[in-house]
Image 1: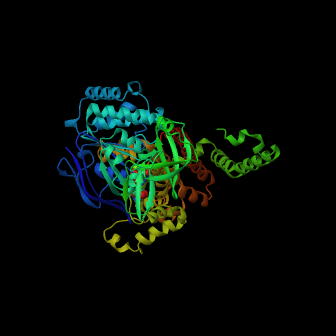
Image 2: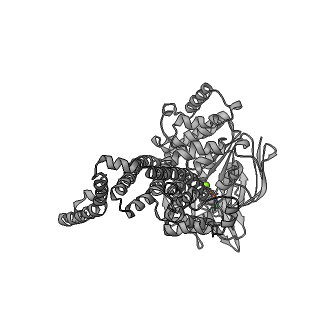
Image 3: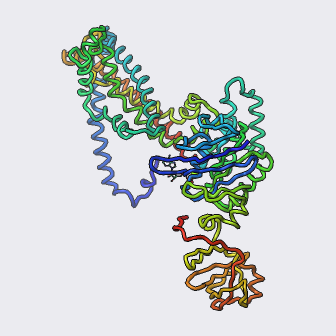
Length: 332
Length: 286
Ligand SMILES: Nc1ncnc2c1ncn2[C@@H]1O[C@H](COP(=O)(O)OP(=O)(O)OP(=O)(O)O)[C@@H](O)[C@H]1O
Ligand SMILES: [Mg+2]
């Protein structure tokens, strides 16, 4: 019960949207496809769903190469970036659609369908909305209806294309926690597309970082955050300091910069304190080392202990860093 | 319908300018639209209802009416289907020569109706490209119903397609794709997803198409051959009557045609109103 993508390539005219992608989606897990806008996330999702035909490579679903399988035969449920609810149908009709269009032999009875619709509406906490039209609902509510509609046909895989993309920050947060709980309940293998790293790191079991039609890294949220495999991943997931010395780029996250009064093996460098910003849960210290601006993040207690002041100097070291050969600049 | 501009006095012209402009428009409309229409009806009934009825129920006139209505119905059905296919192909598929096809759809509007008729004479007439082939098989196209239908079809082709293309473009393909992933067949998707969204636009295109088909003169005149009681449509019949100085009969038939035109106008208004309602409801749904 897995999806595996093998050397998949997709071109639009002369433009390569997916460049030799290979991936395995683990069973029962929530995988996030994370990447900047235009990196090919939607395209990959559409290829898996059978809405787009690849130019090369294969997609294997449950051990079957699904070259010619129609979207419905693949057993996937798809939630579109912009909901794509049927605007002239009520919420209940939307959810029932996938069951109603089944051939007579496999179609559930009318009662069974409406019972199922009720159950799903309860699941997405919108039982009061069954008679409404989509345009009478808020964005977050529409999104949940789209999810219920996809779940109605009991897909083996759930593909979500930026399900919370069009919502404001507060609603996003609520919905993604809700989605995580839902996933823990139903355990359906899910692929979630997002360009929001916070979202990916918070809800996913596995994160696939995408850039320019290529996979940069696959790993657990902790892996990709703490051990980025490429400069791109480093820069895309959170803030990073880049020091270049003797043709080598060193990448350090702000919270991996440690400060000290005295020079020792862990704090070999001397930096000037440019500014201190203590408004927030942690203290942000802007530093200047040689020609490079650095950012350090330390706890309030640490700042008090070190008695840091703007304009002074401090010894710094990196508790964790990554070195990469110089690479062309990445546009984020 | 109040536009926001009209509510702001400082944005509108002085009252006298407005009055003059409105006066000019009303005068123009009265002179060029209302007056002729009134004349048609006054002339039609000048000699009394009996004469009007005699002219309309005359067997030759009756045949012309039937022919016009037949051609119009066939034309609306066929062009409804063709227009739907064309709009579907253009908005749902990617293929080479799409831009060319889009400009080709407008061709019937660009060429003179007389030329539209001539094209078919040159193709299917006795001296035409396919003339010998057709006469060998005893198939009559020019100077017969098929020719009239073809010419009318050609002239009225753009109405439905023009109406549907922007509508279907705006609708996008996401809902159809969503239905496909949910397992709906192509026909089900069309019937339950696509059609409900475009039905008023389709009807609107069909009304425009029928109005034009009913009144088409130039193209039909070239291919019909003006055979009385056989290939004369209502507009052609009216012209013949007029040329023969049968003014009362001519105006009687003209009044009938005008009445049909007014009816389509009412139908058009109704559909426009429904479409506006539909549209404003679509707009609120992204
Ligand atoms: N139908 C298409 N025709 C031509 N180019 C396309 C088509 N669909 C996508 N592309 C191109 O492929 C690239 C990847 O697109 P895709 O929609 O997969 O990006 P994405 O990662 O989902 O971005 P976003 O986060 O903005 O949704 C883009 O550069 C886009 O311009
Ligand atoms: Mg996308």
